[in-house]
View 1 (spheres, rainbow, N blue to C red):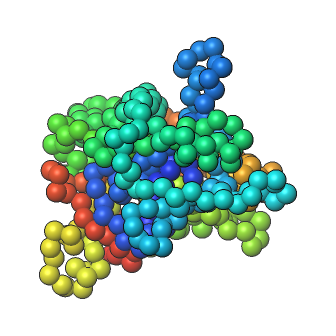
View 2: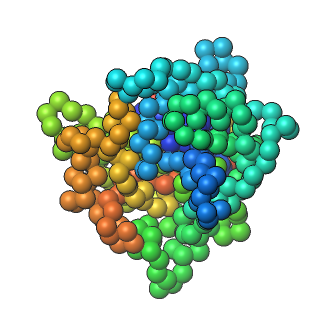
Length: 348
């Protein structure tokens, strides 16, 4: 099995950037989901409704925005707005820094799924660009270096370790109810705190090409499922069959030069990702990237097609499953390392 694709989403819910290599860290691939957009509703009577988080689940227009690395390789990336056919707005671009200077920015508190963190309002120029593209007031926020969100619930490895090793214990997670196996690397992690950026639940989302091909087989002849609609960080190929990953407790990635017998150093050692729970899917799978809408064709019925036989998580029996949430294995700040497309991958 091998690592086939790597992705980051610098601005959450916009289309991703494909990478040929990446450093895997406890909080995810660097720069993944450090920015996020909010619809500003200042006239809302309830202060809690004045800022509405914008995700592709509810704002299909986010699919009109692509992200790309700066050609100058200067620590910047480009967001491109691609208007739908017939729109009056024109194609336009915005340059953003992966690590902007935040000293002059206004700090604000952001609550995502009950997990709060501090973030910085990117200011008039950036907010104005997004507002012009969408046609309503938008606030773009950035989570500065050193800031993370707490992982809530039972997704973090320490929660799985505590739950999965209890004799006679029970859990709502597919990992502990379907399998009795807890990898050795999960044990003893109860005291380690995990942090995430603006990712929903975990630093990593892992899918396989075999499962993507199964979805494509459900579409009309000639149509292929776009893997980026699953919003993964890591795409693997070589699984024995589609959805085999449902049963994996962890994956290990061995850098290609180390697999060939070259000397291993800190950046080329095996990297382990602990897979703690399934990813429950929503209508974002039905998005039409060209029009910024939820498609009304067969390609827009992906969620419904998966409903037939992929509602396999006992805790979320009304939603289909695709992919696995992951956390970096090992202990201490030095864990992780460099991986590249083509690296050999194993599973537990």
